[in-house]
Length: 110
Length: 116
Image 1 (cartoon, rainbow over the protein chains, first blue to last red):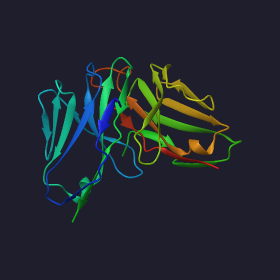
Image 2: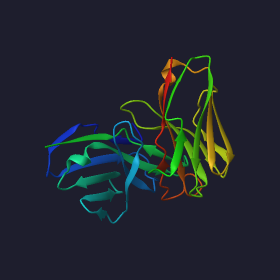
Image 3: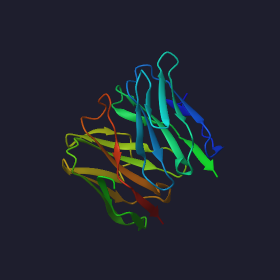
Image 4: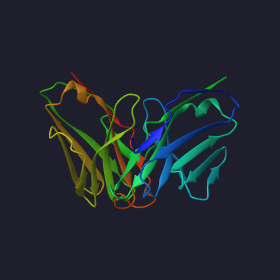
């Protein structure tokens, strides 16, 4: 089983749609969780950290479910500029490094 | 507008060449990383330096040799690479020692490497 698993997509959605991505992780000792965004041929950029209580940043909402070991990202009112690959990232203190999921590709269409 | 600077942006090299990738950050970060990313795959960790000491080597072949001359600089020396080593090489930094809770990575824009 992969340490961090994501649905690769692609998710093709119209502008204005709401879309949700899930990510599951295998290590119950994981402590920190992030969503990164990566545009084609560019570097990953931090989108948001994910906190136990859930957190929101504008149109983006992240949730963490420790009991079920998954995190989610909800994007409301999708924009064309949201088209990218969204990477779920989990910290593994045993390994002292971050582990990346394989990413979920989002294509927002006009 | 990344604060982690990588050079060169593109590199083409033959299998007998020796080249180096360079990375620089001036955010006072104490951990620096090399990742390798193939097309449509996630970044794969290669090396981590924490306080200028190599703390993680993910069983990377010896044809890749990292170097951390000081807290702001990270190099990756390349020698006798294979065509399958062609990839995007990403440098990243984080504030504290690697693996700290809440670590956030800041990536450079990468070096697109092609090995002929």
